[in-house]
Amino acid sequence: MSEEKTFRDPEMAINRVYTRKGDAGKTSLVGGQKVAKSAHRIETYGTVDELNSFVGAARLSVLENHLKGPEKEGFAELGETFLRIQHELFNLGSILATLPEDVGEFMPRVTAKDVEALEASIDKFNANLPPLRSFVLPGGNRLSVELHQCRTICRRAERLVVALDAEEPTDPNALAYLNRLSDAFFVWSRWAAVHGGAEEVLWQPNKSAGAAK
Image: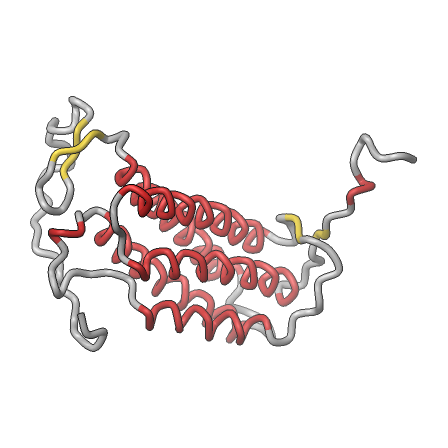
């Protein structure tokens, strides 16, 4: 599919929240196939959905707490980026909820351009960060922690896509997108701490209870 083409808009009317159709532990893929809710494919796009909710929480933190002060433009850009990523994650979930043989030309999905946009954001926000002297622990400020949560869920989604692809083909951009997105969350978490006026929490092995005193 040419990446210049417009994706198909949703065609649905949601009138009832519950249908009772899933009470037997089955759900339907986009192509209509009934599968167990415990199926690997369901776990995979369910995890992408979970990630989306955490990205929404991080975006809310930006809107509520970080749009004032000297770094407001950078935080505003992050907020806009997070909203774009929420749409991209739903596109990713759409393609993961579809068997390869049912994928249509205009079906929403993540693309190479989405991956390139993540790389550009990583380079931009990483440019002026201090060099790392150790591994970073989740901390600093609330937004930084929320982005670390996003990073770890994204890594789990990435692992699930790898396992799913071993069973049946998946869109090749899905794995690249999640891999780059997890890297982006790491950089954004550092940027949010440093430019949010907080100190990064670095791993110190000898801070453990079992270290020699």
